[in-house]
Image (cartoon, rainbow, N blue to C red; front, side, top):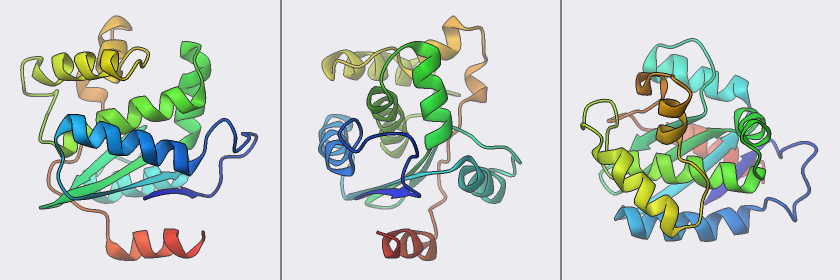
Length: 171
């Protein structure tokens, strides 16, 4: 399930819809070989900052967080960072959200670009090409001189059920 909490302001539902992202997420999930249910929360910087602070002890918003479960997991994405990156890299918000979904999905599959000697980057690049997406997060980090350590990940934590229930109740 894809949840916009709150809806992205200034963006028409025809350019980015929950149904469109859900279809993409199912395809990315299959390609990444992630079993189970995956829920995706697209929220504000404030919400991502709260999650990042709570689960990673980093008091700043981030673009994407992944919360694996024994079967599936949760992905949280900052709508504001996605919108800014879409403008910065010259592609649509829908494409940026898909890049972030794919990146989060690979973390749910167990990949870790901080410690896998480029394995995740290679898989992400192959899948990005297969899915006809622009440059991946890892590719962009390396080309801009940023450390891949600046990219977020959560290996073993999960989004609290109350967080998901609250987001679902707002739909």
